[in-house]
Image (cartoon, rainbow, N blue to C red; front, side, top):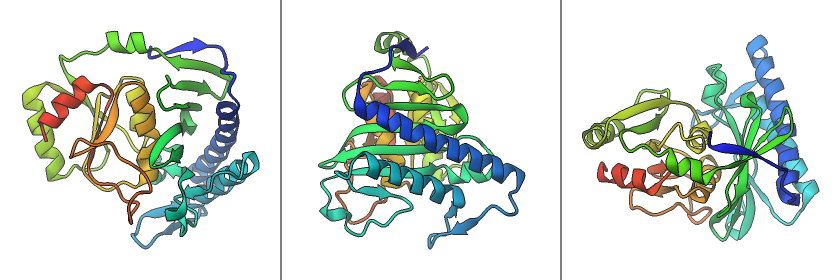
Length: 283
């Protein structure tokens, strides 16, 4: 068990964000049930890049944005469903994906998340990933062990670094892959990695893979097709806090809001430097 029970943290921002995301979880769960029961009336649009966006995306975006503004107007909000024309003038801001895993949502797989992080000077310093259908939130500051909050019984647990280190098994590598068909680039990488260590595959959608990494069900998560900054910021921060990370193919950590585009390049996420060593040897 990677998270051990603990007393609630005496931290205002942690508790405020947990309360905000608990409300967002309720909204997204209601939206998901509505989609499952009345999918023909559920509003789905398509963006210019043909990716789907649903009424659920907008409901959660509006709710979380409103709550964050009420908590503090210190930070602007860069949301996938918002307007961010002035983002290049922002040194510090909230980065929000109100529904990460729209494809999973529409495929009726409950592996979608709400991603929220605080970016300061290009680096993510605070992060949360809410998993509505698991009714839990992974949350924490960069450099501190992350917490897990259960919204049903309002209990807290904290990442157990000692248990995590003793559970590392280099006999094999658990690789997180998407449900969709993999590219030739991914197949080539996995073939090379399999020559180094036996592989176990864990299929999961969206940023939920980062949560499975925090639970040590996935050791390495390679990604060779497009993501955006709101897809990776929170997961990267939480992984860095436990001694892992998310690196580009140049072995450098992602920074945020530093480029003209919000699209990410290829990356490999990992829970421990030992896994990173094996993964980048297969690149």
